[in-house]
Length: 123
Image 1 (cartoon, rainbow, N blue to C red):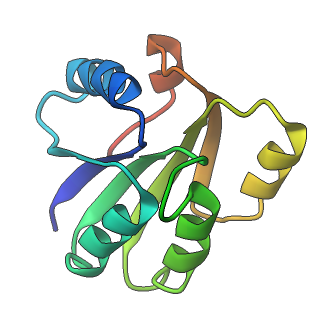
Image 2: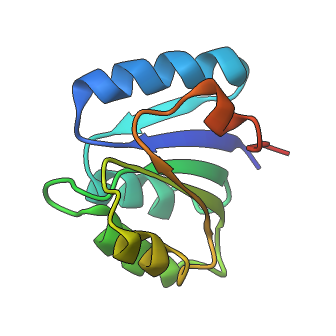
């Protein structure tokens, strides 16, 4: 089983910043970036044996974060994944909705910071 970090966000500046931060914290873990949920979902579906830590934006084209979470729920028993929502949304309803997904471990307001990664482990 290969552990991978998936960064799913459509903003290239945010992806650059988050990649630098994640590389600093987890230098030896493969990191892949996708600009929409559909691309991330296709990667997971073709690599079900792998294990994933996903940093997921909510507002994206093609397939947003909510659509991704609904779609990945059907694969929940086949894949090892932990999701951390990283969004610009400060809407309390979004945070409450995120709690309905068992694989969502945290809700972080963009951008990621060192302190946000303190409680995240890849073991």
